[in-house]
Length: 315
Image 1 (tube, rainbow, N blue to C red):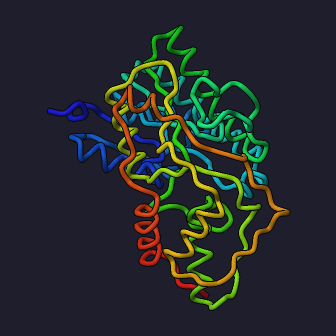
Image 2 (image 1 turned 180 degrees about the horizontal axis):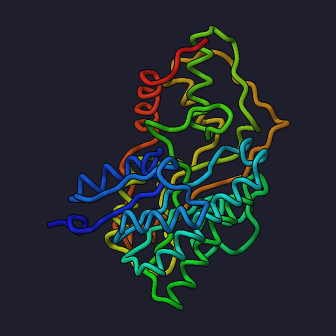
């Protein structure tokens, strides 16, 4: 019998991008009673919605993955929404988890919580050494407050809550909506649409000089499930690969893999976001035995193949 066999597990955001892979991983590793919840099931922004979740589902363990998210443009246009929705969902869930005597609460934070300027690679101990990048600070700060809440509730009430900080995720099933997508799905869609429409250029935000680290979604799910089983500490854990790439090099790689041969124009009037992002992932290796296994090029190929099959046709 595995660790998960006799546990009732609820995954908020379990019908979404990361959540669907976490649910699959839990079931593969012996979970017999795993409930994937979406926004259609309960409104987690309302306390009565959270209370109803606990009354009807009666979980032993909760993975909190539900979030309001978007790329740089979406964060600039909706800072209040991203702050309120992400803060209030976590506040209600953690408080109710304490009241119901939950066995364990696994909370997924965000790399956007790190200060704008911080030594690279980012170490978990640097999380409080500055203010986040302005373009997504409301979102990052809302999620970081949940770390404070978990630590406070552990100290006062003994709630076993852990906090994980995944880097930028990508993979099959990602959000390819140009209004809210992150960089990898946005560029994949631009390249494939431009190739089919025979456009001679695509436009990409920023200078291309900023760096990012990317984690394939199946690897992220493996890390979350491993942490849920093996980790019960108070300190946050970075979840990533430990490798960064310049955006211009990422775009070149996606152009090559999609077969797009046109030009790339950089819109330097648009923000780059945080100058560099890369994680120190040694704590994840030490505490939960996690190391990413999917290389960026291999993961991009899988993501591109999925998009080609599942996308809406170009008008």
